[in-house]
Length: 119
Length: 119
DNA sequence: TCGATACTTTAGTTTAAACTAAAATGACGT
DNA sequence: ACGTCATTTTAGTTTAAACTAAAGTATCGA
Image (cartoon, rainbow over all chains, first blue to last red; front, side):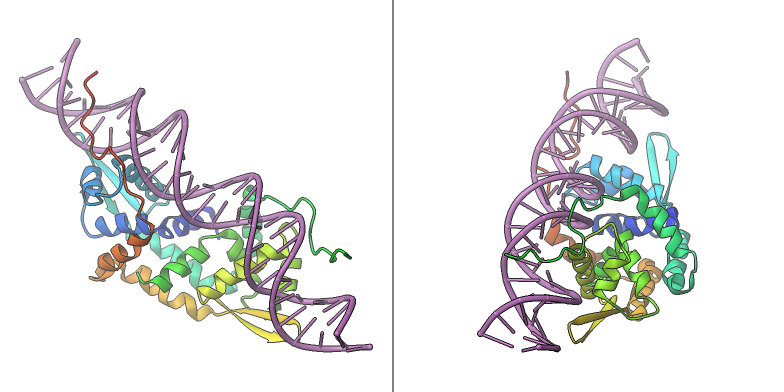
């Protein structure tokens, strides 16, 4: 599980981002048009989701005049499919996971397999 | 995108749960053994993750004496793979998404495509 | 160069997720 | 019946994500 695949999994885990992804799946659409298609959320929020999707490689942007046209890059889902398929036989997965976790560790302060307090 | 697929995507989006999933991918393991393999998190936290994974259908539990043995059910990843593959041509996906979003909507209070304030 | 348009970024708030600590549950041995 | 063991659940806290409002950036037309 590399960093890129993690970003893709994170991206598609959000219903909101899947909604956006669906809109630009088979056509190019300007950021504003995407926001208009989602009346319950602000333009700013949509823009942030687009950035998340772009960082994951799930969409690409093309600037034309003042517009930025977004479109899905379905190829990006390929690697993830493979990750899901190969989880079980990837010998390095565990090690990669550990490196990945190191950045978000929190760690317990006291209790760890605590013996029940005699009351 | 049905509820079940959403649960699976949510479940595998977490590095911690992928770590657990990896541990029980090719063997049965008791909840305690899983917790022991993850020294930086409490038993309670592991148990909650196991529940999330079980709700998503990614693991199944088997009770033996006082132990509960968990094991991954790789078949559960099949539907998700298909979802990722078929996103683009699933005519119902958009409608399903809308139903799915209705439960987590927040909605803007004022601003929506605001005309810039004349200063 | 000024103002409008199209979008992005920042700052701050609210909501949800992850986690800990401790109490609760349930099965077993005695 | 009681205590212990393995695990789950609850309650409360911390961290991260989603969102809004507003400011910032860049491009275009007049």
